[in-house]
Image (cartoon, rainbow over all chains, first blue to last red):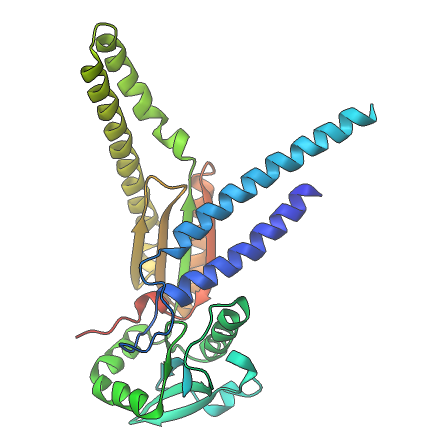
Length: 74
Length: 238
């Protein structure tokens, strides 16, 4: 169940990060007409590395909780 | 003011039927000398980067991509009619070349993740022996330099391994890819991000090649996505 939830979270966040990677950092630009400023940030590297760390942390926390719950039941 | 999604010389109004763009507005076409811009009305002078807006941008571009390959604009492009016309007309020859470059193709993305600690482990082992020999009798300065040397050796080994994997991926898909754009960050978990421009008729073959390649190295984690509009291949030739 935990793995399924994390896999779903991973998939949803990955889809959004992939979209951000493409639409924010690449594509045609009309000089002076971009109204947001993200040019110097490589969002996909930052975003995915943050996400991967958060998934790992979430996995650890949930597994610890599961272990504690199981030992408490015994 | 218009929010601008993409340019194409093949897009038609029917392709946009029922589409909803940024702020819920209907996208439409404005033609300038044979090249059409897909735009929608936008009342503000700037656009916040929200999930909703980003997805709306991509939704419209994807709609066009499902029929033909456009040149997508970067998210957040707002321009008045005159500014847009001046851009398209003044860049007409470069835009036409760029449209030819991507015609009939789509962008596919492959990202590879590794365990940086494991990948650098070999370098640590190689250096550990040399360090141990000297460190026992070394002063603080020498120890500092040895530690520096160890760190540099790790970085170099990671870079070497990343380049080998880049070549391996390139070889795996080379004959089904028109062009590739690769970014590498060997010190990061996500160390390789490749964008491939692939002809639509070779898409199934491309997917099979990537699937086969990922099976060859099960210790690596692959993130694949696409088809995308050619965001990485829309830079203009000057």
